[in-house]
Image (cartoon, rainbow, N blue to C red; front, side, top):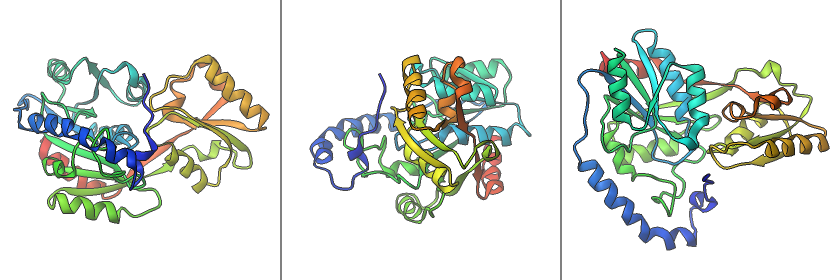
Length: 311
């Protein structure tokens, strides 16, 4: 089953959100007991978790890969993700770009890493895990979507209230062309001590994109608007487009349909790297992807904080 984020989650005033609001108490009760449950913090290994409290499209996986690249220079490190059959795209990317571990739960991953004598494990997702704690916890946001309508699931896109930020160490805000001022101020109201960092993407393979061409684009990511926005910022011409649910697995029929639509539009086909890894091999020669490089502002300051926790 694939999940497509409802549009009303990002609308400030929606009757549907207010009708669903009473159901958020179920999540509030669950969060209350989870936060007061004693979690295990291993003394045999250092752990970092890069997660979110807003569902989808906050840049967790690129941030995990970036932090991995920085830490591997000083420690024996692995990235890790609890196994989800519906999130193979993120697992494939982590396997391709890092040394990666997975298991059916995060406690098993920690045990596996200790057995392999790994010094640091970086978890992609897992802030809401009720069993284990981490030495350093980063919450990812996107300045474009902010916190949506501010409601908890199912009335809105939040897994936790903003007050939960007091439990975490740092926030990483993705902001391509706008300052995160509103979001930063909002975060500060709920947690005065949390460290706030920003990041943005740069296109790493722009030389391979023919900007005089027109492109039919498609994606199955948490925030498809961010993909289209980057293309426009780099003056890449967009023809038609298809948007799929987050983590969607493309069938042969899907890809054939995309290629046929592009031909009809006299356009080339372009997608995200996260989507490209899921495309059947026989179609990859017909499709280009946008490779993005994550830039963390004040990177040295963030690394200084992390080093204090993993030394």
